[in-house]
Image 1: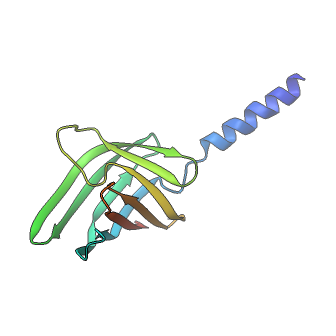
Image 2: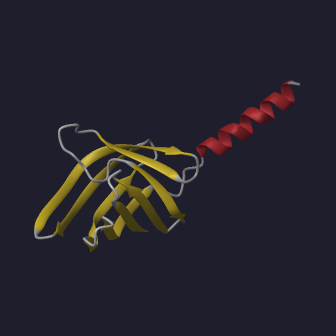
Length: 132
C-alpha cells in the first residue's frame, strides 16, 4: 500500500512540475481588435510578454490605434484554468490594461500561441505570439 501511495505522489509531482507551453518570452506578432461595428484594428510587433514559471510576468506593449498611442509596461500575475484558459491580472491596480482578462488559447504550441478574448461589449481581441 505504501509503495502504491509513493508512486501516486511521485507521478503527481512529476506532472505538476512540468511547465506549460506558455512560460517564456513572447513577441506580440499581431494584436487585433474587432468591435463588430466595422471599426477593426490590427497592429504588428506590438511588444512582448515575459511569462515566468512562478505565475508572474511582465508586459512591454506599445501600439497606435486610430491615431492614439497606447503603452502598457507593467508586471502581472497569471493563472491557468485547464489547458486552454489563461488569466492575466496586472499588479498595478491604478492602470487599466486591455490585456487584463481571461484569454482562450486557440493555439497552444511550444513556439506559437494564438489567444482570443472579449471585453463583454461585442469586441473580440486576438493575440498572435511567437516565442523569442
